[in-house]
Image 1: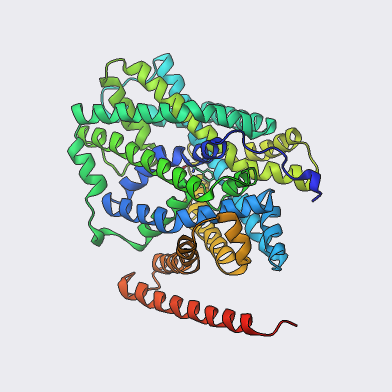
Image 2: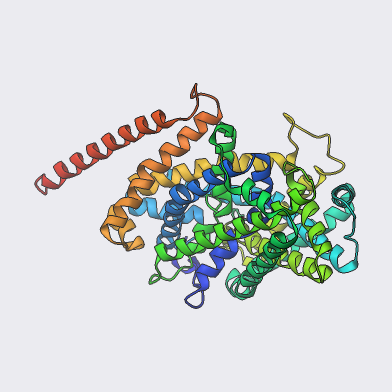
Length: 487
Ligand code: PHE
């Protein structure tokens, strides 16, 4: 890559990156996926593991990704190769960049279908097609919306085109402006919906479902799902954060930025849960209703509110914008890569990627109608895209990133980028070297059923002791090397 192909534009203003990264992380993951997964995995215990994963795994890995993006000042493939080279490591590390870029593309292929649901519900609430007097009626509307591939395909195609148009123009200007009004708007809407839930729905039941946990109900599969979702919701291991980090000015604090993004993201998810579950319980709906959960429950609540029609339209508008600010971040890596490493103009690159994306997402869209029977091991193409990315590629990508930044990058490089007090740096390094890899490996083994009696404190304690020994060994080696005479 030539120096001139490096990204020249940095985020505008002090808040540019924070807004963009928040726009990337807050999206359908928080409002659509988090509630339905919580419903599927039985509530509080899932939420607890998810929160732990955000704090112990997500936050340290996000810092690592931003640092790598900024140091490499390029798309994920180049950025990872560049930082590895600067530390005298193999070019093969760029495989990590490849995997994350492909992962972002795969997520977007099913994400545009869900974003399509959101716009079609915006349209329905404006045109008056969103009325039913029961949960069953709302479920029928959701089914009917999916049943016609031309209808569903129209909406997902629209999302694909809008995403590619924005990315083609360069993400900075568009994103910063839209996130600035969308984010506060979304929070206000969710707050209003929570007020409604307190006044008119079964808030107590919803609250209890979200926060009262019983760890006995937790399966290995649920823990892996919670961990995968922590990656998904923070946009990690999918190219987005590395790609955006490449545009982060040198003087901005990675630590502060990461904490802001993670806190906003978590708050929005919890608020969504608090707005949705009370309505679900008040209407006798099953929390385990799958991906249609919010589309079947929320319209019922809107219908019962004063100015419900307007509220529904505003809500689905915001959800669509939130989905778009995430979509663009998923594909930025690929477009930047074609642009920087292959000399294609951004516009051409986005059209090219857009066409492939359209083909793959159309296949995903067909899972809900004509392709309903095209399954492999009981899963549709749509489900496979979700499963492969969230349960496999993102945890593996996170593991690779933790090992790369924890063990293989030169200390001074990481220290320069992260610019944090020594004790905090030590803590971060400990998290990346031991907490993340051990947790990710154990969760994988547990989900595969290889831990026998399951994941318990003995496994954790054993692995931490191993980690501690490795750390002591590394330190001893470093101090011997420091004392050796310089040749
Ligand atoms: N974090 C986004 C959401 O929660 C999804 C996303 C995943 C965005 C991966 C970018 C990369 O909706």
